[in-house]
Length: 300
Image (cartoon, rainbow, N blue to C red; front, side, top):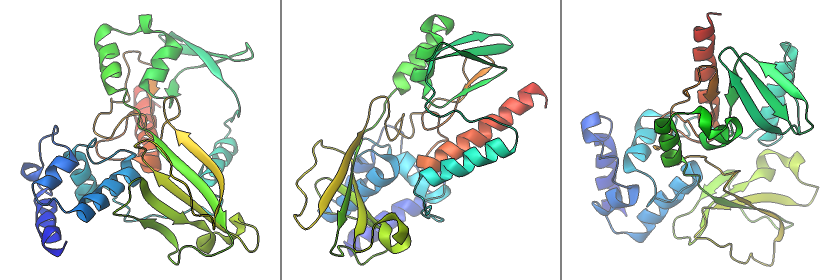
């Protein structure tokens, strides 16, 4: 592994320049094979892909992975919200309301009617909401379904179809009265068939579990099943995210741009990520960039 690691680090270093990046068609697995066939090394990189991009190393362009680790955030700053991920959205909702906005929960949009200077959303209860601009985070293909294909040109519809590559992920939440991990935070794996990482919430956020219990989450990119758990632990829930509610609406490196052919309709979120980014970071990034572009276009 030491010899393989030295060679791979040289390849990663070369990727800091554009000339050192591989072609987009080469997967990370193929790129690694030019340096080593070591099972543990391949396992580490496979599970890093699963943890960050929700795909395997045979599905992710090496160029995306190398760009992320040489030029993007690459988990340089990373942490857990004490309330879990929902704590981020609660804070965002509170800020929206504090600034005069309105947040509606459990509200389904069944269709969007787009006009040159306005848009009307039809809700599940039959009521409507009108706005100057619509920012949609259901992914480009979901946005097209809401508006109707007849409102988009053939080239855009073809681009949406090509980019519609949602990935899948299996998440198992489980609790144990016996401590299973000494490491606080997240632990990655190498020689595992399915398991990508396991997170130890209780050390950092003890209020998330009852006294005497330790709360964990384990995640895998499926191939495609979940194996039996050790009898010392009790499985609390198994969540499979895919199709209309995937961990990533487009594999990194295959995203569309946020703009649509309609001037007041924009996509944001994990279907239109900036190149070589992923997860919540990418969603926040696209939201900021889209809002900046919309305000610039509206002249306010």
